[in-house]
Structure formats: structure tokens, C-alpha cells
Length: 198
Image 1 (cartoon, one colour):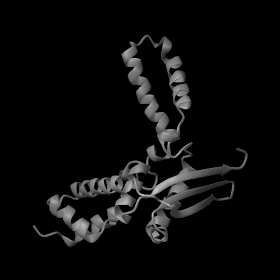
Image 2 (cartoon, rainbow, N blue to C red):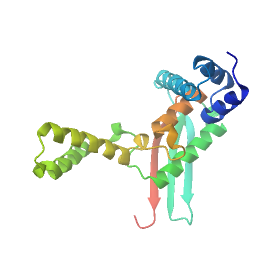
Image 3 (tube, rainbow, N blue to C red):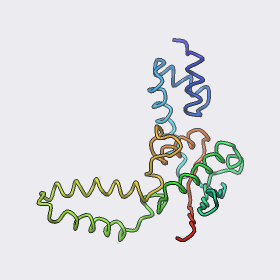
Image 4 (spheres, one colour):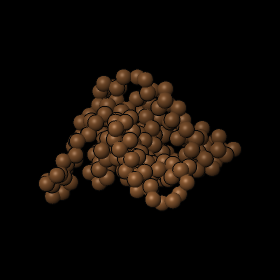
């Protein structure tokens, strides 16, 4: 089956993937746009997992000041080469991350940065809230697991819904897509958020 040029352009615009990757995904999905997007995302995840062990010693520090100047964010995003750090895709992503942090203030980049003490303290608070509920222990455990996911979503940048395009899913998905597109390991290293009065 021949690939429709309009579909090819639409898929490329939606994913940012290369023309050949888009054509192959459309071929593999028999022209189904959603399946093609899924194929490209899965391919990006595979690329990201292969690249994860590689050093990311280059990158950018990007700042964003929200008007009228009472809120600001600085974020460090690393990649493998200076060449990738200077691409428009990388710069745009870095700026989007800074704006996302300004709008949805996370506490850490990833779950791994949360201390065991912080996680246990949150679980204790949740358990105390449910103690007098009369629910069986296994139900309480499931409720706590669900509320912990909400806690991670609020505190961990990579778990948050990607503000630039909710269809992408999480910030981690957006990062994975960028790694698949640029073919380098990319890491959101750290951030700082400043606001007047806090």
C-alpha cells in the first residue's frame, strides 16, 4: 500500500520524527495514524533505553521569567553533544520544561530523588487519614497506593502531565520522544524555581 503524502506530513508534524521513520510507521500500521504514532513512540522508548547509559555532559541552562517578573525558573538539561544542545528542538524543549515548572511546581525531577523518609512520611499521613474509615487493610493499602501515585504526580516533574500537549501524556513521554528524535541521551538534571515572597 502506498503512503498518503498528507498522512506522512501530518504524522511528521504530530511526532517530529524523520520522514523515513514516519513512512515506515505508516506502512507498518496500514495507514492508521494512531497506530503509527504508537509505533514511533515505542521506537523512541527503545532508543531512549539504549541511550540511557551514555554520558550526557553537554547541554543548556535555560531560564524563564513569568511576567511581571515575580516568578522565575532555571533548569539544566543535558545531552551528549554540543551540536544537539544547539538544535531548535532541544532549545524549544528546554524552554517548555522551564515554563512547565513555572506553571506546575514540582519538588524533584524524578521519584528516585525522593528520600525514603519523605515517602514513608506521606504514607503515614495517608494511613492516619484512613484509620477510622472501617475499610479492610487490603482496601486501605490500595487506596494508599492510588494516593501515592497522585503524590508522585504533584511532586515529580517526570510524572506530571506534559503541559505543552496533554496527548503526549507525561513529561517523561515528551522527554522520551525527544531522545528518539535527536538520537542522544537527554537528561533533565535539575531545576530551581523562585517566586517573590516564597
